[in-house]
Structures are given as structure tokens and as C-alpha cells.
Length: 104
Image 1: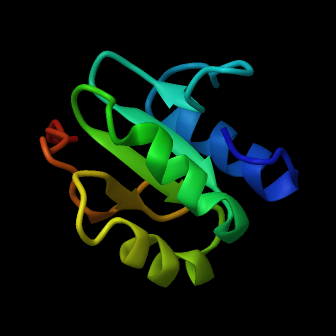
Image 2 (image 1 turned 90 degrees about the horizontal axis):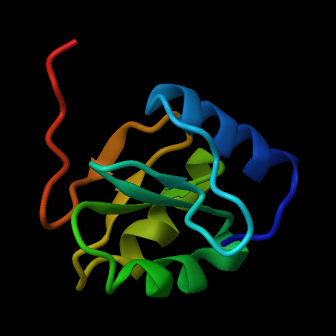
């Protein structure tokens, strides 16, 4: 969904490896598995990314491209079901419904 830049591409590729999938193509979520949908966003594209996830079934997260974006992402998702992940894919705010993480 977000503007494609180096940080976006690096974060998408990192999360694709973490969730054992391939990045989405244009018009698709950045990461989508049977368990979770993730849009990777910069602070400039957070609003659009969160909006695109509001009607997604199952766990949905916006992942930021840098730690500095976490505060803004938490503000944008405070009153909705969308969760927040840091650039490494660590959950900062759980989605509703939650993503069930298998013990590693």
C-alpha cells in the first residue's frame, strides 16, 4: 500500500521472511498469509495503511519502517482494531482479533 522506498522494501522483505511468505504485489497487502495481513507504512502513509486494514478479516497490522514511527502508528490505531508492529515484526499493539503466535 505504502510508497515504495528503500526502508519500505527492506521492511517488507524482512517481514516476508519472518512470516514465511512472499511480498504482495501492487494492489495487494504487503504481507498476507492465512493468519495475518500486514501493511508496511512510513509515517507519511500511516493513515492510508490503517484505513485499508479496517475491514480486513482476521488479525491486521500496520508495520512501521522505523522505530520513530511507532508513536504515530499507536495514535492512528488507538481506537480501532488494527495492531502495530515495529520494523522487525514485533507486536507493539495486538490486533483484534489477536495474532496467535506459535511457540518457537
